[in-house]
Length: 118
Image 1 (cartoon, rainbow, N blue to C red):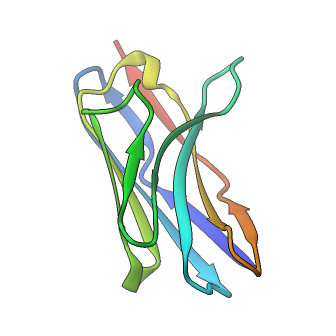
Image 2 (tube, rainbow, N blue to C red):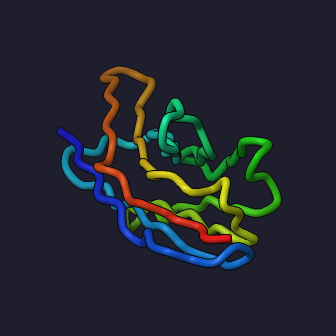
Image 3 (cartoon, one colour):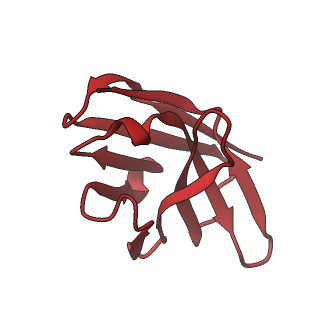
């Protein structure tokens, strides 16, 4: 079983920066892709960014150029550096870990609130 714990959310003014962390623990077998998702009030959860075990990254168009995802495999930790934040970035941010090869597994964190004031 794999567990994820996010940290680093908070309140920031528009144009500011904030960093999130997601630490994984438990029976990690490697070859996992880690991702960030977010869910704003009244909206569906949406994908934000992902990083593979080999360090390949991808971003949603809405955050590309402003957010940077990274991971430290030795610490089983993923990060999301968010710059030039906008009020539309306000949401609960969730991390996800997924292993797509046998044995497959997926786990989600509990979420951390990010609020961007205008």
